[in-house]
Length: 451
Image 1 (cartoon, rainbow, N blue to C red):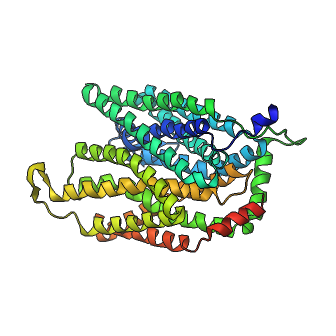
Image 2 (cartoon, helix red, strand yellow):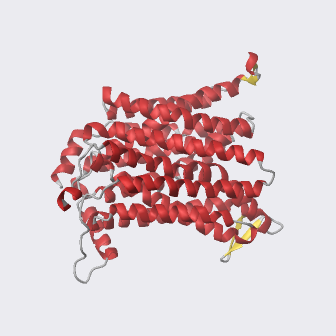
Image 3 (tube, rainbow, N blue to C red):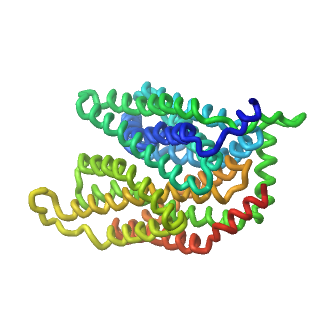
């Protein structure tokens, strides 16, 4: 019985559902906390603590109050770059992947719940709690992603990964909708923001219990060698992987491609609100409604691309999405210029075009992310899933400054948001060009040879 427990069947519907529910659970943090409420609320508190020139004095450094949230995000991402690969190696050696998923989910959700107590006097503590929450969020996703090869066979990974992203968009969008209603009806905006932020932690903590109750460990916990600690073992395992990296040239090539095109995707999402407000003059209400629409449509888009991958293959489906992403940035540069009022809709034509462009983005967003994950899961050796997915996560987060930097520099030089967005096509073209050279069957064979 013990042996059977350590080797549960693959493609188990109950376990797959439990796995996808973690996307439903943690996406609330991404949408409600990171995207909507935490930045503006923390910035408003920092403003009240700043001096007459708008500066905060932190550990001998002076920073503008409106940069505090950005610095917190940057610090949490930088910590992930150094910590996640070691954690992944520890998880693979110890066979404690599920326990580590639970640990960081609990840490992240608890830190988010404690942000309810974020007020003017505790804004620095709030920044530290957010750093802990975002670091834990990234770490938990590494162990979550690493389960994909364990629960789904190769032919089902595209659809299972797509289902996870679909539920993530649905769960994140639903809580965001409820929170926006609450924020609108409450008179005390600060209290409403604190409730909304904490609710994401409760949502994350509550629904992740479904995941914890259904995911099963694949191996018995491994004892440490005499005189070793998990930390030393983790560094040794990581060093061994770096020495063997030449055994996985196709996987490395895929990660480099992912680094470029995913940074392009993330940058388009991040700057879209600024573009809508500054270039098109859209109201905050309209921008929030666009976010909700994207969350809803991306649910179906993820499933659509899972179906498409089954018809034409994951690589071709991913390539098609990147071609569309390239077209999106070109249209953002060339279109949406007419201020004529559109018939009965009573909105400017450029705003209507933005809605339609956002609809296209929603369809391809979930698909490109889901297929990127499932495709990578086929290129990694068994028993080292967490370690390799830590590199995947680092490729996503550790280079997320490149796209914003390109956009900002082009905008600074030419004073044009449209040219700034158009410049992002470089990331899609480079990523697509490298992706076209990836030999997926060979990558799979390389991974199998290293097992």
